[in-house]
Image 1 (cartoon, one colour):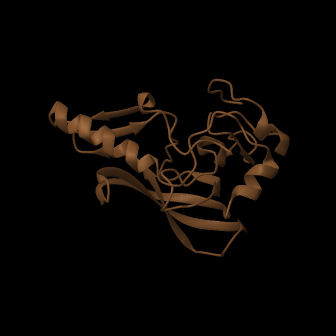
Image 2: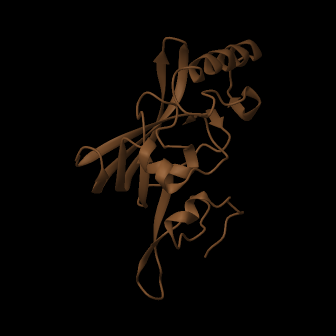
Length: 185
């Protein structure tokens, strides 16, 4: 199982605040990442592992993405909230809507970014593998490996599923293939 903490060197906090405030923010962020949850993973899980580790598997459409400052026991952090309409439940309880919560985001001039944290876009349909939404810093199983955009082929008008980097999935075993740079096929 992966460690629960992303290396601090992979985190960036940009703010108009003082250097001391930035340092304190990083310490508090590190403490927040030490809470139970999954780390961002670079090792792709198998399809069976994704399904087994997910409490929910949903096909959803993102309706709105917003970020705000939240107060935690460790201090203030920026979180991004992704409001979605559930199109189909593949595993877990049936729900009509869901709000996904991610650590990081941008509020005005302040930004807190975590390397390799997936970003969802309004209007896009995804298949997501979720675990510990609202408790973990990333609700997706194995971070970007739990996120699959659904794309419409303009020529054939058929939908297909891609990895978060744009690579087309042709079989469930493709989820475990290491990612290449972003592509269109």
